[in-house]
Amino acid sequence: MINYLYQEQNWQSQLSDLITDPSELLSLLELSSDQLLSGAILASEKFKLRVPRAFVGKMNAKNPLDPLLLQVLPHHLELEEHPEFVTDPLGEEAANQLPGVLHKYKSRFLLTLTGACAVHCRYCFRRHFPYQENLPKNDDWLNIKNYIEANPDINEVILSGGDPLTLSNRKLALWLERLSSLKQVKILRIHSRVPIVIPNRIDEQLISLLKNSRLRIVLVVHSNHASELDDFTCSKLLQLSDEHITVLNQAVLLKGVNDSAETLVDLSYRLFEARVMPYYLHVLDKVKGAQHFDLIPSEIDAIYQDVLASLPGYLVPKLVREIAGEKNKTPLFGATTF
Ligand SMILES: *Cc1c(COP(=O)(O)O)cnc(C)c1O
Ligand code: SF4
Image 1 (cartoon, protein in one colour):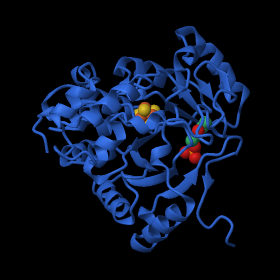
Image 2 (cartoon, protein in one colour):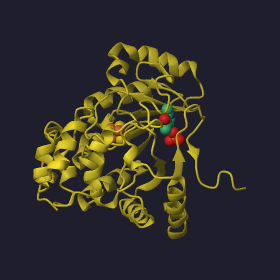
Image 3 (spheres, helix red, strand yellow):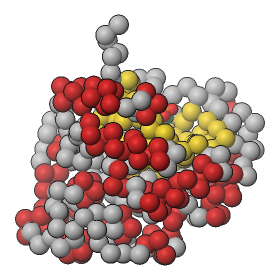
Image 4 (cartoon, helix red, strand yellow):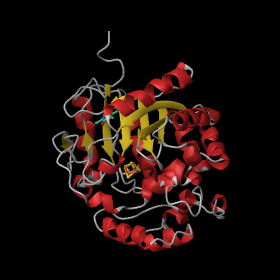
């Protein structure tokens, strides 16, 4: 483990001091491969390297196959073309109703308030999405409000991204206040990887904001491997559930990162120690540049069968794929066997 006392630095300064230079990342991890470095430099021209030091602090030095490193280090394989891997695999541009609003499912929609993330995950299905053209401006609130009111089935708003927890508490407070002014909105969900990559983001202000809201708050974090959940990170997540905030986890099944039942079982148990319930295990979206993380269906099936056989039912994440045009995430296991 590399020695870095991220616990003591506030999240704002961690967020403004991200690692974006591949050679810095590799030298911190004592990796001196020219091949890794040149691949990383080339691939980061398409989708920049971006990783908080706190996350690098959870990696093991001298291991080019560290499962956390593989998620963030740009790789020359990203540049290979593959006909099945495209820039908008989920048809998000078509579902984009107005700036910031992505409404595909009946009761809930995604509201994107920022295009920024604290970390750039190499497998991210949004790596090509034109965020900057799609963010609501301050006076777009009226349009969003009208949109919600015109769709009475909506009872939940999901702040997604980009990563909403890169926003200031002040800005989050403003949106919480706006959304809670609409009676039909009962649940506010926040999808974020920041609590995993910069655990100090869970600060007192954020906790007080969430626990004092009229809305039921659900935080869905994104962790793919038990090594992401060190004791400090778990202690921060526990603070949220201490305040009756529901915390769930979604993960993505990734070749080389968590493609074994043992790794996924460890992840579920570790999450549960932090009182976080496993929610989804996503099959990789076929986004251009991520083909080297892909697994074939028979491998996925074998891993998931083993996970089912190893964990109590309540710790088994739902294996799902997102299929453009479907009314919900599509469950993948057993769907055709009854
Ligand atoms: C994934 C997603 C949701 C959330 O789906 P749940 O199954 O409720 O977690 C909502 N809207 C969009 C557009 C999504 O992609
Ligand atoms: S949206 Fe989520 S998965 Fe994609 S880069 Fe940002 S943090 Fe990573």
